[in-house]
Image 1 (spheres, one colour):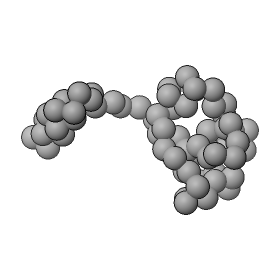
Image 2: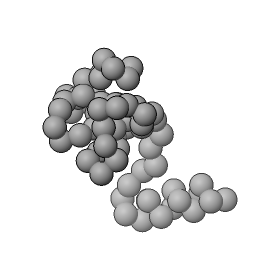
Image 3: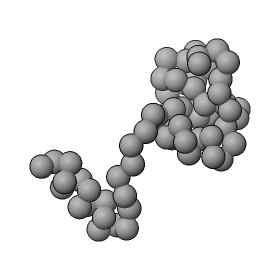
Length: 65
């Protein structure tokens, strides 16, 4: 299956497939956002897993959560 192929490719690089909620972060604040938040612009965001964003210190955006 495609999922197995993807896992195999990741494994060849020493990586594992991860599953979780995606959030968006910017370089200008320490908040994480949903895709529809007015505080973010597509060209200035990075996508992280929610658990990763929290673990490196990002906090919830009060406007979109």
